[in-house]
Image 1 (cartoon, rainbow over the protein chains, first blue to last red):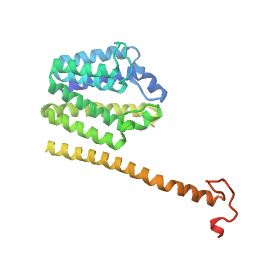
Image 2: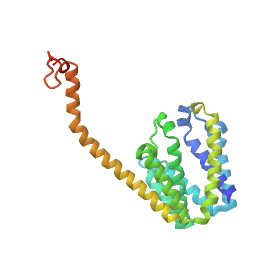
Image 3: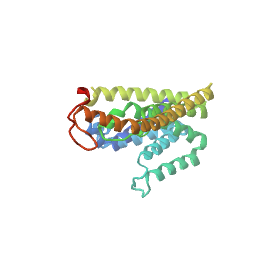
Image 4: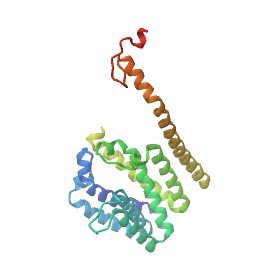
Length: 189
Length: 63
């Protein structure tokens, strides 16, 4: 399960870096998509395929939840599908519910939302310099941190046996990436 | 244990939001009362009246 979660995290990170290429280059923050070039998206797909082969019932709901939360940032923007960010976000969530059930999707969405809030709390100054308003800006730093802890606890309550392996795998991946990116980024030295 | 932790964090969050909102309202009311007085005080100290823009011959400190 640990390897499946880490591979899913790699896929999400590579896709996120591909989408945030311009924004990261503006503040000279290390971006894996820039380093890997066009291959980043291929590696992301490969990583997700391997993650799904190892444990589909954990990695796919986590990936769908990441997509749903990612879209939630641009609720009004229209995407190539013709749908707005909000519609894509809600649509992805319900597809996940239909395929993987309520419990799995609710756990994943709350867990990923919590990680997003922690990330926004930590990156508040970096996002501010890039002119991007994240959740910590919109709702306030303390509210962001408390809501992150609350959603993490609720996700734990929803699926107790899945929470700890997923949490420690994500923590391991996030810690490694955070350390690596800080070391390589000129903006944070 | 987990439900208790959820209740504690929810209470902290709600309390913080309530306190912040209440503080903002009180701060706004206080500023509405204090701000004109502060402006007048500062303008008198600089030697003019903020209401009629006239120079003041005798500054409050000289009285």
